[in-house]
Length: 392
Image (cartoon, rainbow, N blue to C red; front, side, top):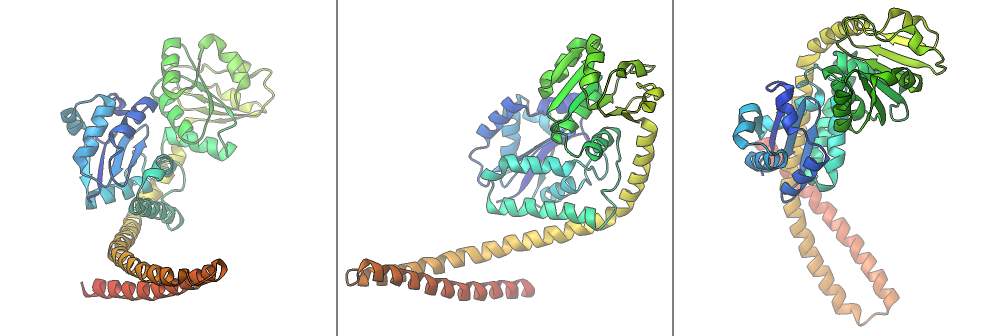
């Protein structure tokens, strides 16, 4: 069965188009229904930059399921999306998993998003699909341990989340306040949720916009008049508005006793520099983020050739493993079936001549003998496979 990957991403479509294919809970349920008969299962990857489906089936099946689930037209998808099959589909998944296909080269979050997609689908995936995903995970791990590809941060939105992870280690238990519900606030929110954040509130000058963001990610929306109160509750504050002057001032932090990380993702700055002088506040602004980004990008670009080598090696090992399984399994099943027929017949022949205890011992001895015979045949078939591969 051919392997297919379909999707829509930042490379070809702006956010207004990508939003039409976003998989909320209801759409995901519809997609589960429309893909339930695909042998081997389907893995669904949905991030702020992409919506993708992977499966061992014809790509048209996936396109139909996605369009039905998102109430979009197939022709519209083909205009804005992309389709990969076989070698191209494998290559795409490896590139996504290692961060080569990310808007931010070497994206530090993508592997967590792939792991979440895998976790949600793993109970329905075939053994071959499991092997493929595990191979992608190995390629990602090698890209981080054998190169500089994953070091440093390389975008504003991703840098914000990485700073938060470095500072707090675990985002699930901290209170997070987003000041601003625009594009950067939306990207930051999705990144935070993807990395385990559970307690997020958003404050915006226009409450309707805050409510819109809140409904998308199941977070809490507050009017701008509640800013002071929400700051006092927050462990992490991310400021990302279009204001042309600071809106977070030292007086907003009066009476705050907890340690706080404040990330200012705006230009002009949204946070008065004096806030960083407060004892309980760690302030990170765009200058720090951009400096880190540039250094990280240079290292990552230099590592690309090595990453491609790693992908080719891991993909080759996976494909060889698939060929091996397809060669061995039918032959092993046939031998196992024939051995079972023989041993079952012989056991039935003597069963009435033995007491229960003796018969149970005979069954155990027979099982061990069968297991040893199977091991000999498996080793023989494996050698046959290796010989065939070397001669090919």
